[in-house]
Image 1 (cartoon, rainbow, N blue to C red):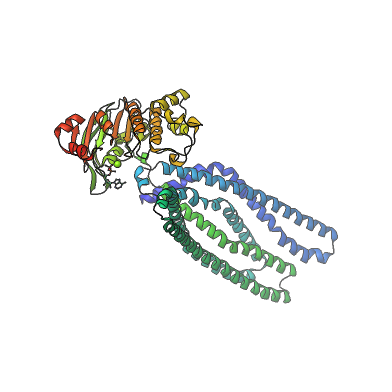
Image 2: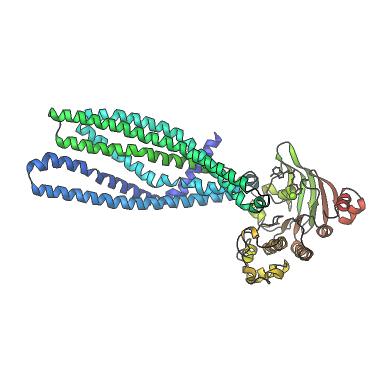
Length: 581
Ligand code: ADP
Ligand code: MG
């Protein structure tokens, strides 16, 4: 019930924000459809007038006027249909652009947990492909449907006025056809929806394949990927085939039934003319109007499949739009503008899947400006704890506070304006070194950029490039070494100047030179910030104000390096057995 309500609100919102502001264009389009179709209807009437009145009267002047009127109607029809197609196609593209923007905006604001369970390519497909079908709602489909209904209804009235008997005879096959089509389209809609899903899966896999090309080539797994993709497109082909079968069935059924109707009309009409119950002109007009009534009904099979595709796309779009945003949480009312940066975990527990707690009632304080290092074996819960501190995840129980305020009540926008992250895969974007550093603060001055570049020791290598900071680094920074990527990520964080900093240190084997440089730049970065660092480097751990040793989601030891060594416990074990932690 609640879901139903949400669904309605969303679609109404879409309508309000996108279509309503463009109502003038749409009404103009609608007006043009009416004019265009009405002028099209002049021809049969004129034919009847020609056969029944003008020819028998032998009046050449009348004939001239009649032809002029027909030409005028045809010109009006062509001009209006040109402009309405123009207007509606543009409106359709406008709708797609806006809708894509809305879907992207929504997706990007979904919680991290959502992305853990989604595939990148699938989401791309939701934004780009699913929305595409909606074009037909406003474009040709819309115009044909409104115009078709209008023409069919007016033609029907005119047909009845000419001969109720013949009209009745025609209506029976038309009604049967209508029912057949409706049933068929009911069947096709799930096929279209399935197509959206397959499309998304295939795109998803393709994105991964191309992203992981080094691993694929490295393990000689091209054949496998080629096969998977072939299977995907085959599925897509089968899906399209089944919908094509259904639509062509509808079209052929239409042609058959309506052809039979026409044959019958010839019989009945011929008979009525012979008996003097109908004029030639009326018969001519009847057959022409019949064509006008039937054409849109047959067209419905096309329009029907277009609209069905549009609705199937909308279903999938709606599904995404109904996924709650991470900021939707009503509890978030506290705005933290200026902060000291005292953080505290109080009995915090968290599980990704119910009953499998990954963080188990941990408590600790991270005073403003201090460095807290999380150490422990892989899978012990370090990244999860960092994710909780970053509000990427929310505690199932317990509290995380910033300056005494529960983070679950603080608006994400205000919290994250104080947050900076440097992650293990030090994510860089396609573009130049400068663009990547400027990313959190595009309006920073050149002086600030230079300061960050120096502090993070980016200059040491950027100076060696001909283009300096304007060097293109390739997708995800593939044209740089691991150490260089990391220093750019650090420069970026320095420029962002956050009060709270989360570092997931890379374990990668850096050469000694960049190791020292990274060390130096990290030190610069952490200065004066409340820092959580998932530490692998001994030098970082030594500098930490407190070390938390994590074991299966619990803090098993805490203290400074020397204290923990002296304790000769778990930390001492990790330290001595692994040499590098
Ligand atoms: P660490 O960073 O110490 O290596 P993590 O915090 O990444 O450990 O993981 C802790 C546990 O949580 C692991 O058992 C891991 O399998 C599980 N886990 C991590 N991320 C997810 C996720 N998105 N969904 C489900 N389980 C997860
Ligand atoms: Mg981790």
